[in-house]
Length: 95
Image 1 (cartoon, rainbow, N blue to C red):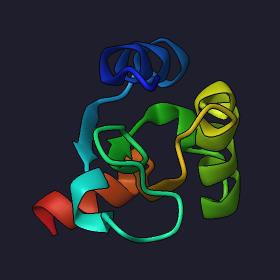
Image 2: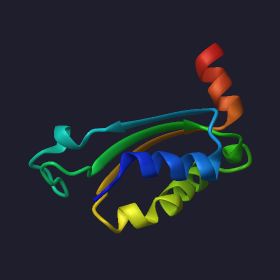
Image 3: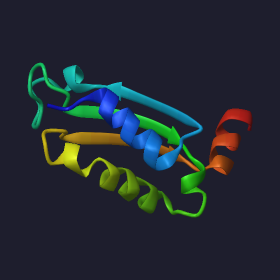
Image 4: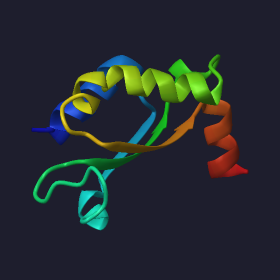
């Protein structure tokens, strides 16, 4: 069973995010492939971290997938990721 608190803790320990938002979108995917009623199967994660400053967008996403590999192998079906390095975050939030 997927535990949101554990996911949040793993992400915080790995990336020390300046911003982190995790939304459970599992119910919106009911009836779709990979969805299981009552289980966490689909997450949307928005994160800003200095960890991403020297990484391409693909490497940012891969690093989150690696961090959550146990969950992805245990029923977490989909991650929608919005990752930002600190410069990108400043542009988005302070234009």
